[in-house]
Image (cartoon, rainbow, N blue to C red; front, side, top):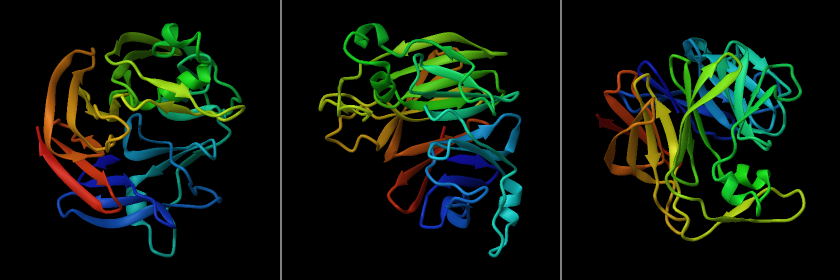
Length: 299
């Protein structure tokens, strides 16, 4: 989910398109874009939807199944006619297939997570393999004798969030309560804070080339969605187990970009995703139930 001006761009796939464009004030869908298909600028599975560094009027999309990254100009998307699809402004192909999630961090650099020996991988378009690898997986010392890194990668999936000014990245874990904050410096990641507040409880599932883990019934799920402004990070926290509707959350943990805890917000209803206004004045939450349910929470 991405907000630009008074419009919200929501991953909301139907048979033909991936995105819905919603007028926030009117709580009404005004258009759709992101045609599903195999042609140029056409999408399928969406793994990452992200801001484009230095260009708030664009949206970046990483398609895991295509190993490709796309950028769409949002002004052009709104001008598209019914008989002409919006064309992407950029399409980069042939990312390493081991990436599960990729974000654009600027200066022809892309940062991602996936099935690697280290937690994070830095790459450039046109290269078949990442250039640099950084940091151990969360709880790697605790689990490495029992699980391969591929299982640790599955257990520690989450959101990569670029600070709007492009200087730092936040990683919020989906399956446990934990995060990383690191500073970007040329081709280096400098870890500023790692928090491991709960421990994931899981076991490997499947044999051979099947990459999957099974979380125990008492595993407490973590940050289901993380978003940020230049001042703060907002992490939508579950705290539920798999026998509950753990993707529906009412708690938002707020941190500054040094990793300091600021406050915990209790929403008046559960939501499955959030975004924050540029000036930190409100959150918008959605519920993924097939309808365009939008809820505003003033901060």
